[in-house]
Amino acid sequence: MNRQDENIQRVRAARVKTYKIRDFLRLTETGKIDVGRSKEIVRYLAAAAAFHVDHNILLDLRETTVPEENLSAVLEVALEIARYRAAFKGKLANLLPDDESRLFIARQLKALIMDLEGFQYEIFTSFEEAMEWLSEITVLS
Image (cartoon, rainbow, N blue to C red):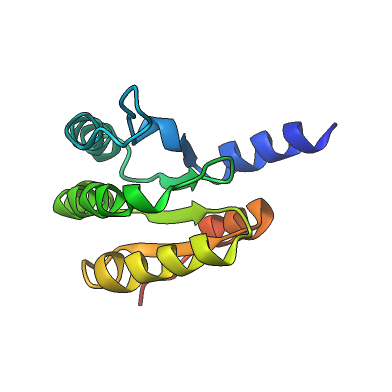
């Protein structure tokens, strides 16, 4: 079995739904984030997530770039995700490229939005580490 097949099996076993950046963000012809369309997609995904409350979500953003002029748009989309906090009950793992500027931005969003809104949200650069975290069983006392 190759590495990709192993990863697919781990995702299925952990009850994780994987989303790529194109599942959340839409771009205009000029390459800027289409905030209105992206917010619409967040609402659609929130509705879908509400039907799968026992699933965790892996946001795989490793193959993406975010130009600085799009940072405010990313923030708007993140705020839209926060509006639908009740629909995203499981863990959210954000898988990013190992790029210090991207990690800095993600940490800022985590501190400013995700932690404050009560998301179970962590940032990773390793697929395996993200899957381990998503697969952890939390014992409620």
